[in-house]
Length: 317
Ligand code: AHR
Image (tube, rainbow, N blue to C red; front, side, top):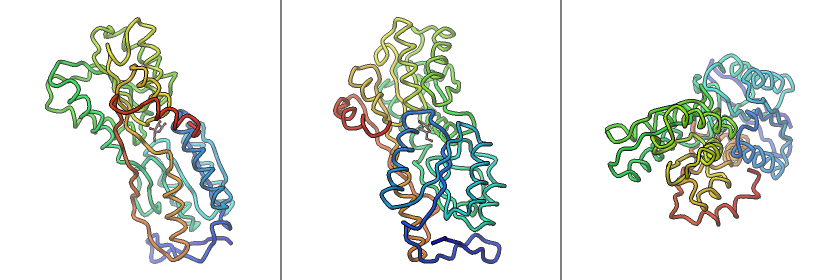
């Protein structure tokens, strides 16, 4: 059955019709495969759709917003019942989201937010990205306990909401702690390879002995940086403390080996809550909140990181 929503009085208001999940066709515009976390999100989304009998049309944008815009236009042209969008950057979505709205197709954001009026999408399933940065910063505040510590920062993709928000949260947490200074900050585009390249440049510019901690906006960049630190003859996790975000298996393996210190978990299961919300809406018109928040959990060396690695290693990361 084809789901169609109705626009009422200029506001986005969907009038649901009864639809079974098995009848639904949903388009998923995924960013790409920049990180282990992203691969896991893709795996989980496909599994969730299959489990519910949903026909999922998957489009890999290879990190380019223009490809995502094309994919959304194609989904609209095909008349899909709903669209899942993991937006690579925060800005530049208004026009294409208006096109989806005009076609009465609900859009659900996954894992990142957009700078657009919130009536252009049905709900956003994301973590509190600022909070993640705050947790990372607070971990370092506690860990250093007032000792001087110069920090290098590997930022995520420029213009993406996690890069913006995780930086904001971290800076908030370390503000007022004069022992902590960010001495270098640059994007590593959320990839392992760029994490390594940029860490090499930090080590060269600042000198490894002058770097006390690395804050990476995701684990993959941290894993790349660990390699660079080792190649520079230093011990990651000891000479340079490492805190990052995602909780991918490889960072837990690094933590089990004492080569990284802390990570904040981001669940790859954004599709589950998103499809639950869509199905509830289609079943009886339940309007989801504009933000469905996922949990953020801190893992440190106090956790059994080898067990976590074993538990996560075959989950599609
Ligand atoms: O938007 C979520 C972020 O995107 C993840 O932390 C990162 O690994 C991914 O690329």
